[in-house]
Length: 104
Length: 245
Image 1 (cartoon, rainbow over the protein chains, first blue to last red):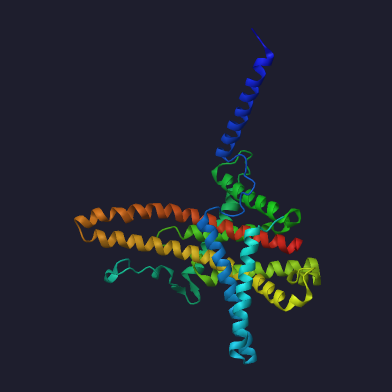
Image 2: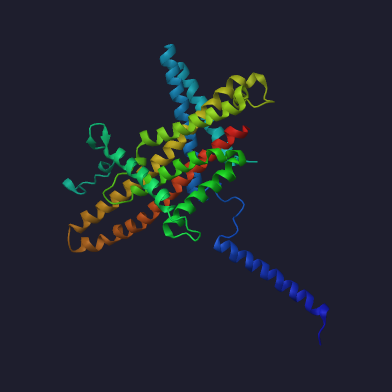
């Protein structure tokens, strides 16, 4: 007995599972790129090191600029301290932007 | 060289040795990288076959990879920067890969080299932003809508954040290459030191040897990944310079 109403849902389910399996197979072969491919290399270690590097490099630039300003103006600890705090703030800004993702 | 005095000497591999006055082994390997890249592109594309052979395939794949990256990251106007990004990517990649050849020198493991590369990128993105946006470029350092009272804090922070790109770009490549090569050398020295004990030491040497095999594979991954990261960050900075947000 060929009852179309009875067969249709089964076929639909089969189709759905086929689509899912196809998508899984394509993803496995790397045919469909995931949305965020190439954004950030996903491992938590990599992300942590990147964030740390952003903070450290901003601090280096801040302290370096502070020392240079002090050397120029002869006010040894003043700009060094200011540069330290501004560099830290810039580092946090960098990490914030890193987490936000640069593109909209 | 590895086990002189039975100590671990991990850093001698990064020493510059002058070949001729003013021309070091680092320069030699830069020259080799330049020649190898030119050879790959010129000789590889020589047959101009519709169905590419292996060398032509390699040349085409590397070209298309960077082309796709620039097109995707910088956008359509970014195409004029493709030659720059491609040269940069191939130079860093070949520097990293040449470093994986035994007895060779890794020129990307010197902060002087990576910092110069990052400085070139930095000057380019600043020049591009100034050329396209003129004085509006300086609005980048003070987002519109922020209260003017905060300007003394926001502007220095933004300038430091902008300048820190040079440092993070160069240190990332340099630190990755140094760390990888030091690890390789340390574990290779373990193998030699343990092996020289004889007997049980030779059995014990199997563990660092196995680890080193894995590390070599990992280092090849890092060589590609860091060249990719350097190029893609250049693209992202170029995107910022072109679109300025």
